Image 1 (tube, rainbow, N blue to C red):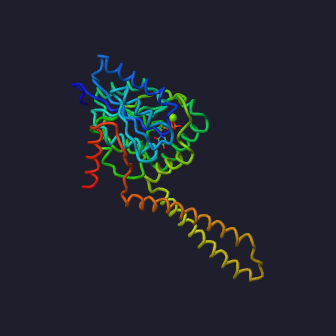
Image 2: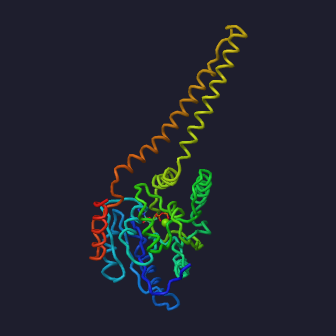
Image 3: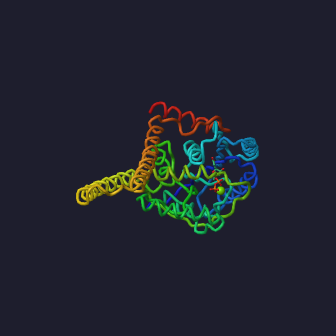
Length: 337
Ligand code: UDP
Ligand code: MG
């Protein structure tokens, strides 16, 4: 592994959706933390920029971000034209970030910012990816951590490699980020893409804390959407399971038909056919078919969305010339492709 010799800069990307309650408390903490880190001579981090991405908030988040920018030279703001969702908001920030290392974290600081020290030193020791891993989810509540565990088991049963308890709290080297940005899919599940990148990875454990202020911005609907993306973006196993189920049912039907023929000829036709034996298979097959069509539809829908190659986020404005230039460069790249 190569180790970092020269000084380096960091971009810290924070997606914000209706965070007017949390940001006034968390932004100063993030700024203080990184200022201290820069001043600390035991690492070679020489500067940072805090990129706050406003993901179409309907509250005062953007004016708050503008005020933070005016008051702190390190803060930059990016405003998306509407709500694109956590993953896309993060991607927007990542796409226009250009420092040597790029960090992502949530606006509510549920993820212990002290873990960044471990990420920085992992980077200096040659890691291209330093991933925060929650080793204590008690603050998440039984429902959330229980469903997360069940979901991880489902993913691994389907053969999807994922780093358990790693959300989107991570450090990426410029090189690793460039590789990540080559993935052009519209349906983003960033944490699932990370293990497919390769590169030296370091896991940095930390305890997950309660939200600093405000309510969770992940509605059940958004969470289910993300969970489904996590599966359908990485495996066609559900389609195979459908095919296998279909084959088993088909075989079963042939065997049953043979059996019925046998009964019919061997015991004459005086047996009254049962109601249950007619209706139950019908309901069962109808159910299996509808479910299968639903799963197929999920994939077809995904193909439909991907082939349109629509932009994954739209930036309305930023607070700096430098970021504006990066946005323009990104648009030109997309037009050329
Ligand atoms: N977020 C976002 N767009 C959304 C939903 C959430 O940018 O549509 C941001 C939110 O502001 C926060 C992060 O994603 O910075 C994680 O959201 P939250 O803390 O509400 O999720 P939880 O921690 O409850 O899973
Ligand atoms: Mg949170």
